[in-house]
Image: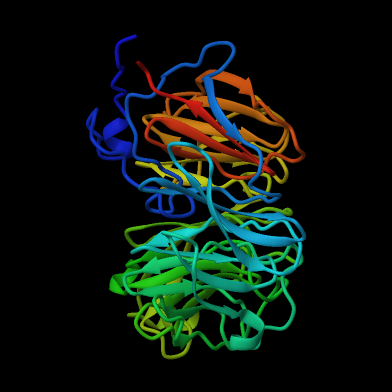
Length: 429
């Protein structure tokens, strides 16, 4: 079959030449944390049986984490033998290269490791933050959120973030009043700053279930994330809280990673909450003064709000391609929807999905990949022109709720199913 160059490829990501090394996937939700993976010449439709299963590993431990891929290694975390581990597999042989201790507590970790400059970072369900060498898993430094930042307790479903690397800094989200976010020296673990603030309004308090993303909205470099009391923006240089948006919070869990671009932030949460488009702008009027935090140069202005019946994303994530946002709609549902981000109105939406319950959503080469909770994978064209399903298949294993977000690297699809890692061939040969 000849390669098909989809017209949306250029919108999704820069093209990768055939034969060129595939870009690394060093962190959660792809190279830019936006759910979009750099790939082309992928299958534009799936055969009835689905893409070919190339290999599977069955010893990575229990957990809901995704995978990161850098050079010749695959990184993930898993619970096995009564403890939690940071695990590296050889990309070519698929055998375990090393396993490093993450926490002495048993559990099902959810953190997709972050890889930078020969170092690997991960967070356990208990709030253990560990840095190890990528070569052999040797520990470089470690800390706990409780001891370093005075964090009391942990989220209901435990710590789930994936740390963010920004240059020589590691950005984490302990979620406590004395350290909502924290910046560390990535090589030593030394604290550079913490964000100290008591957030007001509804919500469960403490950390949320995602890490931070980088934004330059309003002309200020900042870190944006969701915590228990909603969305926040923190100044990258100092850790100062720039803005707080509480309406997206709920009393149970705020989970999806925010989408950020230009001066905009799109946030959503489930449990009957909804979604909002925020414009982060310079504070320059009396009206802005009423919305802004004291002393902040920025204000988070709500451009529109979508109630839960219009759009809410539970935990499957969202992707933005051009003027449109694609996601699974509904609490504990992955009903495919395409929203015009400028207006919040749907270009199209489906009242049922190819699979059942929640769907983790990523994009590559002009298509969306929906991974449903019941183990169904679906390929859907990323176009506002209408819903176009291009294939479905059922994953080769079923070990409970199928929640971890997939990863695409070098034409291959990696899907975690608890202790099993599945690898499918997406290449259009």
